[in-house]
Every structure is written in C-alpha cells, then in structure tokens.
Length: 111
Image (cartoon, one colour):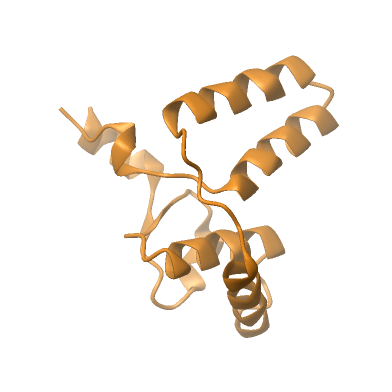
C-alpha cells in the first residue's frame, strides 16, 4: 500500500494554474471538476506569501530558463521545508538543492 494524499500537499498557485489552463482551453466544467477534486484531496493547500515571492525572484535570477510559475513552486518547497516536488517537468532538475520526484517512477512504487 502506497502513501495517501496526507503525505503530499499542493500550493495555491497550482489551483490557479488548473483554473487558468482549462478555462483558457474552453473547458470550464473540467476546470471546476479538477479544482474541486484537488481541494478534496488536499484540503489545506500551501498559500503564497512574500517569502515565496522573494525567493522565487532569486530563483529566477539564478535559473533564467525556469518559468515564473515553476520558480514559485520551487520556492514553496524551500520555504516550507518540503521533501521535494512531484513533477515530470525536467526544468526543475536544474534547481540546486531541490529534490524532484518523477510521478511516472512513483506510480510503479505506489501500485
């Protein structure tokens, strides 16, 4: 049996991204379903504050190929002392000190 969702968290930026991407694609119902599902799995998303914004700015300066949203996610992991980030986005691999968990690899471990 693998870890349950209480072992993981998301940040409020992810929720904003879900709404933005799906609504931009014209998939409003999917946006709301996905948002609601994420909130049921992760009822206490990590909020963004000045600490995350300031660190994201520093990360962007150090890693210019990283997107601003990715820098915010990396900053959340750092400021909240999380174990790492679950993503298939290879761009995170360049951020020194950030542990990246590939969800495709994790799937076989959890199953």
